[in-house]
Length: 396
Image (cartoon, rainbow, N blue to C red):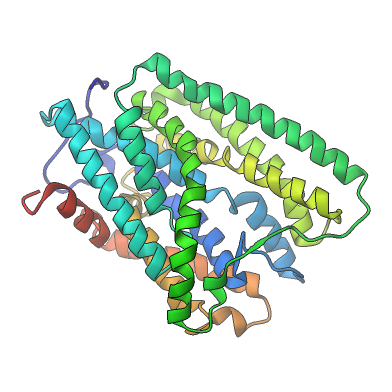
């Protein structure tokens, strides 16, 4: 198994500036994007979360959520998952592990990640990605990890084809918008477990929802593959050497994502009226363009890492959360269950602006996670500790 020269490793506590900052920073901020999207989904029991008749400030927030967060958080997750897979394999190889031993570690880790996803998806939140990425990680470990550079260039070809597809959908959707005379809502899917009257009912609903959601998430391997390609080149570990690539990726990725999400954001906010077929098209465009937010946002984090002080308190706190992103992700689901579920506090039902409540709760939950991580930046989170123990055994 061949990798580039391995980065310096240490067995003791690691300060934020003593390791590659960009990957940790990306994971920390990624959790905010995921929180905003998921909280809105919980509030409105839909995928994506959408107020069918927003008013006042909720209109503007709905627009921003659709253009910047909905279907834009999981691609960041996916890119960083593929990147992290190569990082982990490289660290194992640098410690003297054979290719077979590296493969065994990754297989065990991803198999346990599937188990984490099953528990998370049935007990807490149907929209779990851990199980899907565990399956994707198994496929990537067995089929992609040991491939050469020429083979991995296929990922770039796939993304080029996806960009062309988005342009074609955009052209068709634009034609529909120009000739549309209806006033149909976006076709948002209903999620039964999110408006269940009690926990046992929600648990029963999630037992059926989680497998379906996991299956629909498996094609995200194409996004994770791009993260693997970038990790092989140490794009985030050495961002100063890849400034041109990062700049172009940020501009193109975020540009496609924002432009592609714009029509659905207008319709969701009630500022653009279209017929039912066009509404389906703009939502398709919204989802297709959203995958480009993954590399786009990650590239921005890479550029920021070049300029910020790695020992600054804010940056250190965000990086600390990034190092315990699994715990942060699971903490969010616990928070949604306690704060937003109909059978618990149901905060969104207590105020006149449910979208605003969802945004405030999402930011507050994320900030709590940041502060907890900042209090002990070198200590791994509980989920990371458990996953490591299950992967390596009690002595690691």
